[in-house]
Length: 297
Image (tube, rainbow, N blue to C red):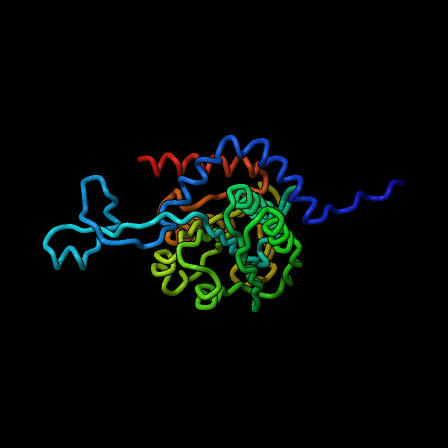
């Protein structure tokens, strides 16, 4: 009997992903990456008179009120972006009805975005949040350093299934990463309260949500009973997938989850939902193209 193949290391997985990124993504989204993430990552320069066609979001209302005509803030584009991978590692991510879990899917997605940032000469860091704890890696630049950073994130141990919900310390978060960073929040996004001062966080950072779904979360299997993790309590609960009451509870949960997701990220271009069965690079390419079309409009 042959021995099972060894599990690839995080670095080996990243090298494999890097090959795909180099041969597929660079030619398709290299320029789009710049346009869709450069939008608000800028440093203030001066106040100038507003002209037709300028971005109304840049209007300086204090100066406008004093002078009686519209003025706007002028910015200098930053030469590099700071990409922050905020990995919300809740125990519910350990579910998977197919070949890979929701957690494995999100980690691969995090690796893809880290490699894209390395290829575009930006900086990348991460905040790994688990129940009761977090690990911070300050942003670094350069391909080798970013790959090492991503490998560190991918190598983090799986949280205890009974550990409860993740609570992100946003006050510490804002001290860890600079203003105008692009924050890619990867998680399960089970329904819960919107973070305090969320509107201020969205002004400080360019917030983008990356959510993972398992196919069973949208369409339940048509037979039998299953045991699932309640993402709000962390408890294992039996679930009858054939009963009318069980399906009604599931539909209610799906609606609540979608409502919370859209409350966090009202603009469709600021959120990406992937499935555990998706080709993630294809999903990322579609995401960039959608954002590019929206930015151009």
